[in-house]
Image (cartoon, rainbow, N blue to C red):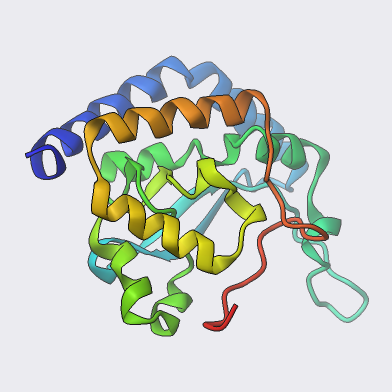
Length: 201
């Protein structure tokens, strides 16, 4: 009953309440990122959701679109703006995903939604992470985030899928708040973002 009825209702009303509470902060971030990213405060990308359904995730844009002499995007770490770096370290770039929660694409807690192009690379075991809605935060995020391997992420995600319950979700949300207060594991060493999944790493 929790998974099918209680959790969806808690997700919707919690996301709505949080958005109302943080509205001033949300607006300030939109303005700052609008200025820093040439009028583009938001970033959308197709991700894999529950039952492999593809949806567009909404995030704050933390990197600009600067190109090198050949017209190719510069590496992530060179495009990450000062404001964007602060937003990422505090995990504030995830706030717009509250809109995804209201739409029903996501939950507050669940496996993080990975890029849709990864769907065809998963093994049957790895696909199990899509048995539940993806979340803004999850078990893998409070147990290493981007500093752990892809295999560890899958194992943690599926561990959550098999044990999803109210008290565990509360624990994950509490640990997420601690991570925001004291940011760790935001980037992999030498990367501004996590290394892409190729089906083997």
